[in-house]
Length: 510
Image 1 (cartoon, rainbow, N blue to C red):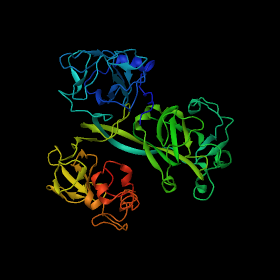
Image 2 (image 1 turned 180 degrees about the vertical axis):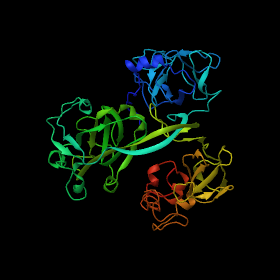
Image 3 (image 1 turned 90 degrees about the vertical axis):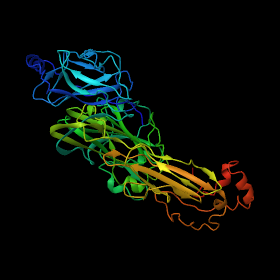
Image 4 (image 1 turned 90 degrees about the horizontal axis):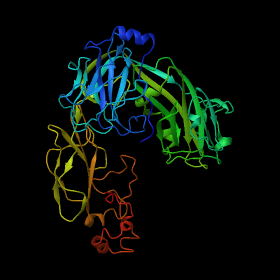
């Protein structure tokens, strides 16, 4: 999902702090390091031009403020002074983000941009001391291949504390809008004094189910049911210290959709369009049973939007239709703070955390699975081989529609015999590596498809009920096979009219 990203919390200490930094420039090699970078940024953060530039994160390990004036960043080991860092200062255990955009901007009061870009195919990055020769921190001689929206850097561990920034039942202002407000209502400075005061959750229930979840004055049924699909909710909350976070999660109970903003910055959504107005509806529904449970949305990449002191969560609640019998929005925000952080080894990071502490790392990805035979229509039995180029990876496969996992499915040991209509799913796994996605190949044998389950009975080897929420309906539609067309006509022209297979046979999906 792509949406405007937050301004980063880039520490530039001035006044007395800057004087102290100049007196103690902190040029020792232990003070500052590159802790994270992204060489294929698509949707994590945007720069001031609204572009998804690559970026480099510099971290001050302490014990003192560090003025970076005269240090260098480079992507070329033969040119260590390629881009000079201007007069900016990092507080202890804080960060500076530099965009690797080739825009070459060095105004210390604005975003910083190097005069080079990073290559996702593998490159070199180094932080160089003021002498122009001493390498303080580097990833090289060639860092490994990088992947879209996956950052690479150093693991940072330490003591962690769980924090709740915003609880359900919080004070809020809510309104069912009757005209466009643009996005002004999502910012802290918006005047909401005319909106009814309430406590979360907000919603309505025309039958039964959600009524116990509504806060004081949280029932908006009279204003919303049968009238509008949108509700606006503004929830102020305080954060004493927004630094040192390695986790930030927005928890939502919602029916049917929402778009959430933190201090005016869009941070998460579900069933919400990219552009929404005062009467926008949800793009899909969220089942009542699912809406009763908190669903977590990782927003650590937006930690830079948190402010010391007052903050605002604005939620655009979305219902699927004005005739819906119910509606619900219940938010909360949780965080994980790290203290006494220590820096570990390099690797890909579980979550990109520009301007915040990193979490754990992993060493790479399992290469995708490859099937020797592609999906399609077949008359004769054959064998399928499944391979991955990752040495010592374990491949697991299923034919019952279930997801193969590290502990579920048959371990692949050799070619698989295919002699009837089969949905073959596979994934590959290896310790300390991210597994592949699940690949699926469907092999159709029309002779058995045309005759399968004439009375809707479950075919041998097929599941009796859905394992991933599917609705199973075996057998061909008798109005088509033997009705509109003979069996042989259907077999002879399987691609002539896809609707001819509209009996929802389990063997139809490709």
